[in-house]
Amino acid sequence: MNKPKAAFICVHNSCRSQIAEALGKHLASDVFESYSAGTETKPQINQDAVRLMKQCYGIDMEQTQYSKLLSELPPLDIVITMGCNVQCPTLPCKHREDWGLDDPTGKSDAEFLKTIQKIEEKILNLKQRIQTAKN
Image: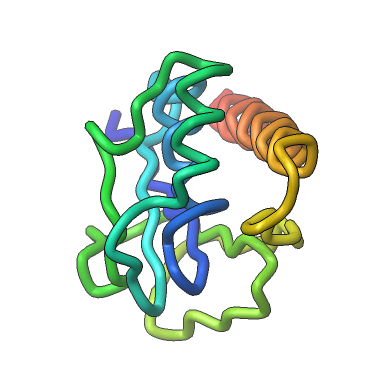
């Protein structure tokens, strides 16, 4: 059976949504495919996010990901907004939710790590919900 496709959506696709895509691939690729995109793009992924993800998980987001627009996504099953009050009506999906995360950009490493931890918890929760729904 095909795995559901989940997209993590943010305005700039440079921080929270990129972290969620990376953690989705790292922790849940056996259950769902992870993508991320934004309504605008940035020339590079947030460098604090890149550094901390490398430090905490050994993931180099700059090697595997880049800032993408919504139009670059495949057809989706799950759309998750990060909490930037972004409405994405052009993205049809079976399930939509908002994770209500504050953007840690420009804040301390401690704030970034809190956000990364919350995203990890939410990824694992989503993975469990998808697995439960399949059974």
